[in-house]
Length: 101
Image: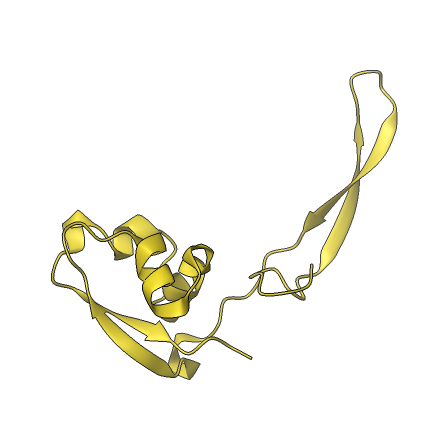
């Protein structure tokens, strides 16, 4: 997977599973990735959460890509984007990290 995917460089493993006919087939899957160390994040901006914010829109505003929302989660040690940016967090400040090269 080349490009800007959060899975770039993630190790791939395979497992054999039986299909409905009992035939074994190999299924590839990604091993867990290690998120970026939040202490190593270089802040590009800080965003004060508004009541109508969505993490994809915040990612698009600062990073130019709505699918880069996971970068904001990684920079703030958040697993759940809705727990980071949403109506329950109005007024909170989140860091927007400089994307890794």
